[in-house]
Image 1 (cartoon, rainbow, N blue to C red):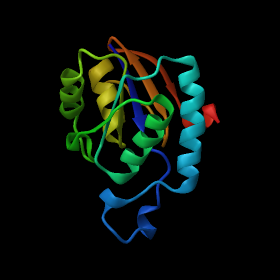
Image 2: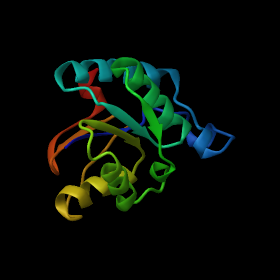
Image 3: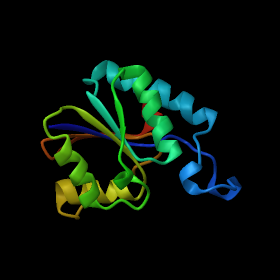
Length: 151
């Protein structure tokens, strides 16, 4: 199974946002960077067959950018919202186990913690910056590409 874990793009700063964190949107720069990075990445790697996203606005908007490039369905799973645990990611992977590749869009530190548990029994530390793509294949890390490497 191929899984692309994608951290949402650059969003409005928490300190400047006066609504709920779940409503915090991407900034225009975040949308543009995601478009460019996804376009380049998915010219090289197989496109996902489904996109599963947190319900947070910034994650859903990131999923929408990926949808515009790949043309596949976006499915929202509230279990991926900020604060998700490794088991929540594993539930999503199990639900879509017959489909490969899949893209999962979520948040930090949830994604880094999941990656560590999923492939290294909690013994791995990784830095997962906004807009980054982690490519996992059969529980092995193929690559972790920070968004700025694709721009």
